[in-house]
Length: 478
Image (cartoon, rainbow, N blue to C red; front, top):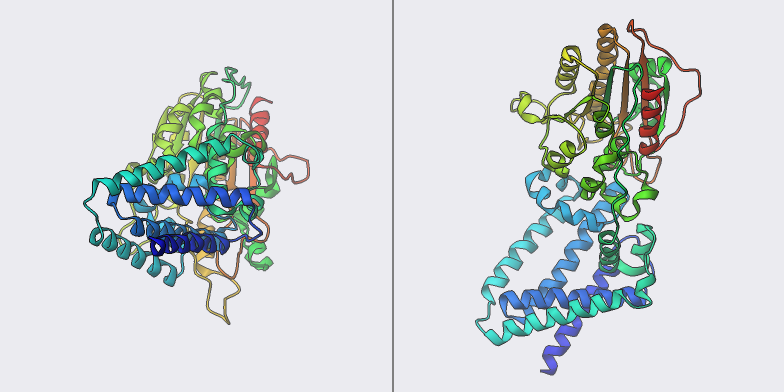
């Protein structure tokens, strides 16, 4: 018995060591350590309930912590952000779209995860215990651990921990498991905002086109070479009603944060702990979305995205947010084997201009592109190249799309607006790292009844995605 307790104690200690290796590192709080230990006991109890072996349960609990530590550090290196509670909601998406996530892991990390998963499955099958007492003991351990955690969260000092979102500081202070639990606990206690019933009064504009371009950023700024400036973006800036930098919070990923801000207009300070994945709670905020407010004024809105609309639950959120129609991947010819992996920006421009030209009444078209999705290898040259030809090729496709949309909307000769922006910067190892600037460009262009562009007179404006939403609303209703 004494030997068994020693082994379990060593396994618990090993989980603490694994947690200490997670970045950002810092001196862990006793309150965070307390939560860590009881989370491990709850996990071990669950495994013992299922498989009946206490020692195997301890090994699996250690493996879970090690797995989370590897994934969190890989994510931090690529995106500048550790694992968050909201990421756990994307577990199913990892299996449906592994190309979006496995690129964050090095070869040895991926190999270690696969080997660990196979070893864990084999160990669980080999060491299964056919004992009702062992399984009930696991159940009792899990229930006690969950009860202790629940009581702790209602008492000081845990009641006062992580009351405001500061993920990096809280990770360093309370550890990975503690911060995951605390942030999930704060998130689930957040409430929806009051329902918005106001309709937007639109005096003159008849068409609004919004394009969120995947990983669209200025390569001249990314790679420090003015010769790489995008001609379409430069021309659009010169004739824009308003243009500037979009101050996105994510880097290399989290399209949904930028998309939510532009569509719903609620800033991250308002969202609180919902900010990390606002689409998890967007159904409760649908009345605030731009298409819903335009719909109350008689507009018809169209959402275009040539990828799985179940990703981020867009298939549920977008209709609730006021989009009358969703145009998904089934409306496009998918690239043939050997071509690029995703539907082209040119194909999306075809749909936008076709629908804009055939629209009978006032309408909003919101498109989310995907052609410029990574990974993008750096060019050879020393340890890393000074640029990525793969990224330059694809971002030029987005720039050509912008140029074509401007010309096509001008030819419609209708009072219209075009908003074009990047969702986040690309993560290219050794070239574009998360420690630097995160902004992307945006341009808002205004077309008169004759199709002529109406340039603005003001200087560039730096805006968050939610502020860009409000700028768009002001321009629509002006």
